[in-house]
Image (tube, rainbow, N blue to C red):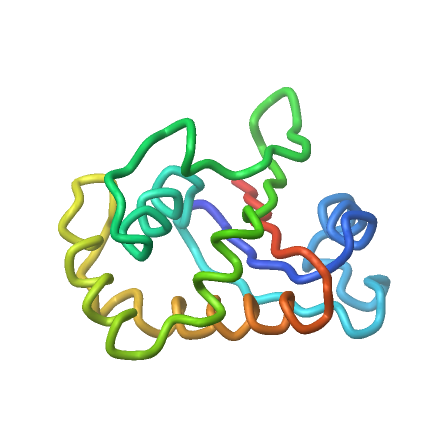
Length: 144
């Protein structure tokens, strides 16, 4: 089964609307909202990817997402990718991304091999580029 991990490009209001309605209500989402659905990507794993792409040692206080909201029962949450991470992702080339994924996937917190993450990370990079050019944010929506 796993955790649904949706990457969403939008304003804060659009991201909150996505949080409230989710991908199951696609017809009622704002026009032009961009999103991609994957499974099992969590903020701590992505925080570590940010540190690795930056060539920095992971620091849980520096490399963390902005928490937006969550359900008390833990069934869903919404976090915002930090602008510095979005900018870094948007500008990373394929060679650097693949090289970074190889090391990142060796972490015990990351499921699968580097190859398992290439497609998702290419799409995440594309969404980061879109967020950068549109002036919108990049959000991570999680649902059990």
